[in-house]
Amino acid sequence: MGVAWPALALSLKVALWASAIDLLLGIGLGLLLARRRFPGRELLDAILTLPMVLPPTVLGYYLLVLLGRRGWLGAWLLEHFDVSLIFTWQGAVVAASVVSLPLVLRSARAAFEDVNPQLEAAARVLGLGEWSVFLRVTLPLAWRGVLAGLLLAFARALGEFGATLMVAGSVPGKTQTLSIAVYEAVQSGQDDLAWRMVAIISVTCIGILVAARRLALAGAR
Amino acid sequence: MTFATRFAGRLLGRLGAGLLAVSLVGLAPPARAADLTVSAAASLSNAFRELAPIFEARHAGAHVLLNFAASDALLAQVRQGAPVDVFASADESTLDKAQNESLIAAGTRHVFARNALVVITPIDSKVPAPKALADLREPLFAHIALGAPAGVPAGRYAQGALQSAGLWAAVAAKAVYATNVRQALDYVARGEVDAGFVYATDAQAFRDKVRIAFDVATPTPIVYPLAVVQGSRQAELARAFVDFTLSPEGQAVLAKYGFRAP
Image (tube, each protein chain N blue to C red):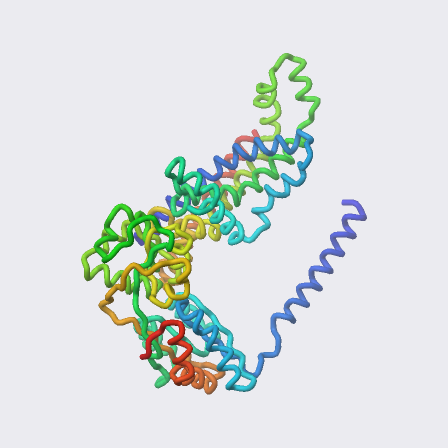
């Protein structure tokens, strides 16, 4: 049982950080894709959506090649900042946020596209700056769509397995998330432990979904 | 909903059902006369991939299907009723468990190879190579890869050696656990960890990427037993495979990959 609770805490920590990163990136990139016309826009959209379509192991391999000590970004980080993301929980956050970004991005883009530009124009006429227009008109109108995507992203990040295992490995208490702990318990024939952890994650997820639904309803009022 | 989208939806539904039917038929091909499923420890992968075609050439119609994973994972599969004919483990204790649960056929168990445990480092490692287990306590070795002891025999052998040297706590604090010995090997080969525990045969298979630092004496000798799985539909062929691994021809292939004779 010693494995289960730290693994759950780590899973929640990783999923929260990943969702926070996805929220910022999803809103920024969603707005960019919804409002700006530039060459390669649809290509960028496709590339950013790719993590949802690619097998997690393919993504994990890309990340490993990119962020590994010999990867071009990983080697640079190591040389200049003495930082290595492989086998750290921060590496797990990177993997989880890349995998779940498309979920926020796609719903954010659609939500921003649905905002009536006349309302924003009216706000500008009434003297609001661009930043205030965004915070007081555009974002509140698009918020439900963004939030729906964010919840899905959080759930996806909580369950992330393949890419995380490849990038962050399985270090108990450090990078062993609940999904990885379940996999290892099953692999090593510890069925009792696997059952307990499966029950824990199931109840946690139901709790999150119910709470999220309440929050969303409360926010809509 | 417009007519067009309704029509498209129905068409997609039909297509989906059709595809499902086709794929279900595809899933259940007539079982081939002599498919032999061999579950083998991950460390045996290179050697068994060479053994399989030789065995097939000796037994007309035989088709060997290889399934590699950590021994405990293979045991878990057999326990859940996976259709396995031969089970080759990297330690006695895993096969002991299988025997106690009557998962293997009586009288078919044989030790067919021996191996050694080594500590390896990446070939381009800038850190001075460790010379003994005690050196792994040095902060220079920030991450050390080994199989998860709960499910990987190579990890258990490493744990045993470290425990008898009184170094387990120090190494466990910086351990990166792999789900099988080949994953630990891969972590070292990529230079993501500073050292790792693998079998001598694994180090030999990756000699262009990893360097053996030193041999590790293990309290339990590293032996590979195999047996015919209880309820195998190819029991006769399975027994022939067991015999083949023990034959001079099979032993020659194993020796080529660095395995020692039983």
